Length: 298
Image (tube, rainbow, N blue to C red; front, side):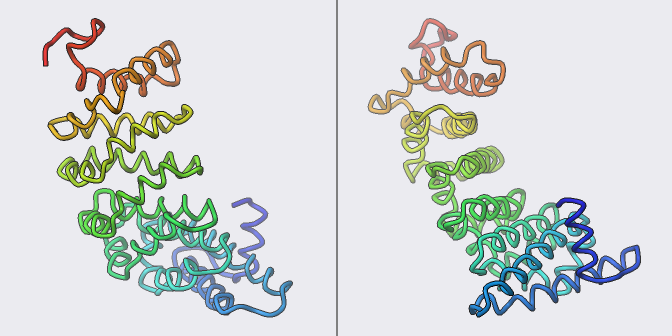
């Protein structure tokens, strides 16, 4: 948020003193702004007035996100009912600019806060966020919703269980196949993270035909997120006969593709991690087939 916007918002919301108590009052005033804008969901007459109210709503959400980087404020907003208000109104708002700021607020409050995460999960936030990630027409909403999803499922067992029960891995796959570069990057990164931390879910992912889908993504024009895709494939083949067999299928042509990719990435400093994943996957799947590898027999 720009300094000018901050000053405008502070003046528009309330005159408050410094300190924690004043921050609570600021949050309450922001909530009043969001409640006033509740009529947006039902539709309004008067376009000019509506635009002003939407601008104020966006500013209130931005201000709350900034305040809730402080963990105590995030807990207080939950206690005040601000997160429930955000879920019921902002995530369903007709304006994409309000929806994505609502998702951002949820992410700001949920990260590193198990108490807030559990509250949001109990209120059913995850299915709604997955829906926004999967099908919202506004590209920024999809990215911010996925960010909020990641804050609810990473290192959070209850969140991961909800993610699995709502077919979250399929949402990530479709995100990687979208034409939204940021969504592709964040989807592939979250997939890699979940497979790294929770290898027990490999079979679930493999049963979806994930190997075949990931390899097809690697055949699209090269992008930086391919690093995460290769990393996910490495996770799927390690200590997994099924994953190994899928990658070794001649119909995929993965060995030839990895050889070519390794050549293309050679000497490109910005692609060294991707190159390492490429070599690691090649070694795991095709060790003994190429003179450049260690020579060990399968």
